[in-house]
Length: 127
Image 1: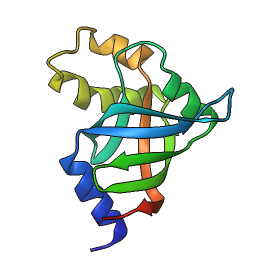
Image 2: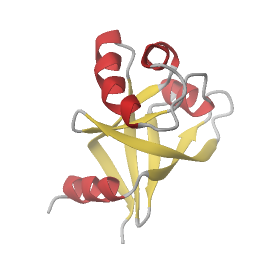
Image 3: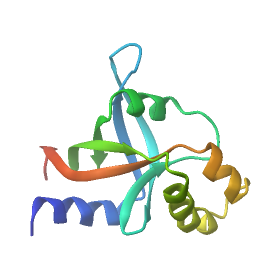
């Protein structure tokens, strides 16, 4: 099994993750808990419509640490702004969210969307 396979298996098991971003203004690390989603065979970070500090941090500094149960990975964020791609991804994610009170159109227009790019990850901590 490759390191990427190990990271994917761990992500498949874990819906809640913690991420550490670099503050866009302060330059200091900021760690938060969030949910990861799977759509189009890839992994995503998003949230209900509205601004998010973690998203603004990733726009400014796309490198971040993904903290999983037994694994810390240095990965990159790919911010998704293309309307067609946002429509496809949110079309898979939003219908499965029982708690989603905003319509799909609002998610597409106003929610942060970031792909977790595992392509060039670095293990910081392994089991």
